[in-house]
Image (cartoon, rainbow, N blue to C red; front, side, top):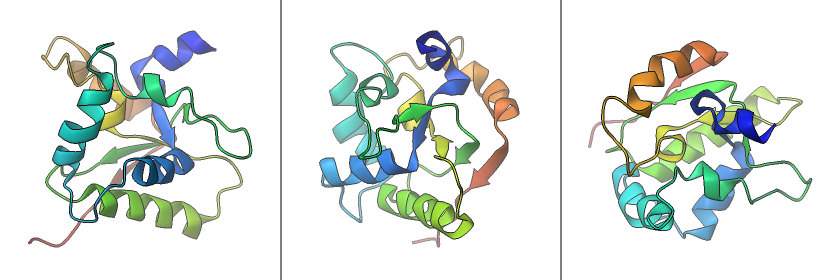
Length: 144
């Protein structure tokens, strides 16, 4: 239900949505996740003061599958790494594993309200989000 998707642990974004987000925003191969958050995610959500998943809920792919759903995977990543590499790694993972269902990833830049970042809000609930996930994905990239 819609109420369930409002729960922090249910704010996963689909692999199709990740590819769409990169195309829609013309994300550079060199832009860090931090820069993507500052240039795209935070400005897009500033007026409503909501997490990006609220905007993503309006998008569906060509197979009419929702962009936001209960995530199977919690994604741990470094904000200084490129967002493009993060997306590419997750898309390669889903292609390699040949899932027979739509895959949702819990990614903090989309799931957490970037306008309300104090320890008493959503950040404090991240351990619960990890427990609710089926698995944890850690992305690693070479040091630059």
